[in-house]
Amino acid sequence: MQLFALGINHHTAPLAVREQVAFPADGLPQALNDLISAKPVREAAILSTCNRTELYCATEAPQQAADWLAEYHRLPPHNIAPFLYTLPQGDAVRHMFRVASGLDSMVLGEPQILGQMKQAARTAEEAGTLGALLNKLFQRTFAVAKEVRSTTAIGANIVSMAAAAVRLSERIFESVAEQRVLFIGAGEMIELCAAHFAGHKPRRLTIANRTAERGQGLAERFGGDAIRLDVVGDCLHVYDVVVSCTASPVPVLGLGTVERALKARRHRPMVMVDLALPRDIEAEVGELDDVFLYTLDDLAEIVDSGVEARQAAVVEAEAIIDSRVSHFLHWVQARDSVPTIRALRDQAERTRRHEVERALRLLGKGEDPRRVLEALSHGLTNKLMHGPTHALNQSEDADRDALSRLVARIFHLHPED
Image 1: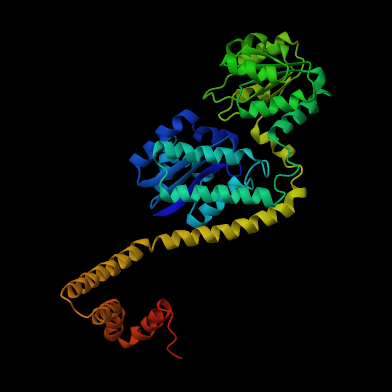
Image 2 (image 1 turned 90 degrees about the vertical axis):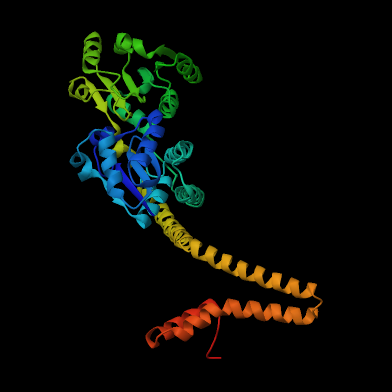
């Protein structure tokens, strides 16, 4: 059974493709069980974020897992095949280490991905699809990420998605302090964005969320107010900046809603930042003259700033990862020897018990203990050595030298001495 990683990410696929294969968080347990039951996959975990959808599997048939990904999302396989990567065992391990360490993120060194990978492992464990091999890989992955982040400067000078959203707004409006900002959603990304915008003291800060209590609690933290998500369409025209990141499978802001808001604003410009996947704001909104719509892919230019300053840290991190990949692969290979080691120990234990029972019988008959111990030691030696010596005696000339070297290595012998 081999480890594989397969999927698509922001390096290989545009947003329009990535959102087609995204998994909603509440649908992951069922998807994992579907994958395990429908395909020859022994173990599986799924990581689905705004920048990537990846399957981590223990299987001998990775192509069938790739076919399942397309089938599950009701897509023709050729639609995603050009964007899909399949990484075999060594490359898969290195990839997971790099992802968790923030080396493969749009924002180099960003810490959120580690938490997302931990959640993917927890979800797989709860779904019963995280076996011994994948569990060990995830634990090593988390340990490597911790080592990279604690011993290198990979996380220094990060320009986050949240900070990038502020900078995008400042491209259009001279000062965020003069603007009214609406946040749609109340998850981790919105919380980070709200914190960055609140630092610029906007004229108004509003949280719109389906759950009123969650939205109200977040708004109070940043001195703002909260509204229900279902009334956003009626008051959208009030806001100059809109930042949206929900888990909705369909857009929460459509073209018609935004057109009506622009008309009420008398076509004053509006900045809209869509951080969701699938997208919260219909793509056609970006074609409106007075809307500056930015998506995840549009943030790459901004978040790349500061990368050069961290290149030395990247080199250090890659060296750590290379070393830890070798260690893990050695563990995997050693794991393949476990059945043989167990069988060898079982055979030795049976031999030991047999000789001990024989010795106890002789002692029970009153035999001399010294002679019984001598017989016990000779019996153990003869039986344990029978296999190797018999194999050497029966081997052909072509095999004898190789077998002799192997036996000498196993028993730490030095025949030349």
